[in-house]
Image (cartoon, rainbow, N blue to C red; front, side):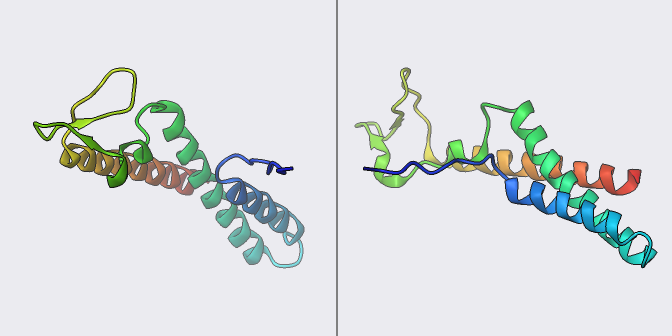
Length: 124
């Protein structure tokens, strides 16, 4: 009998860390104000990174970086050397195109998360 593992949403650890930092900021506000501000800012940064990641996933649901990484053992090559995908419609893409799409999607995600972190950091 196989026991299925409970799947948690992505970056749940960062969300929990953000909640813990918010609780620490609230509990230390009377004893040490500087420590409270440090916890509060760390809470904002972890929440901003978490929100930026999910913002990227919501805006671009079909252009995630991991979708452009194709393992070399799963690539079928026809006589002309074009890659055949295993989707319903066959798309002939050069592996270099996959690499460029992966780079672009990763850079896009990094820019969105960085912009989210900057917005959260400057707003409060």
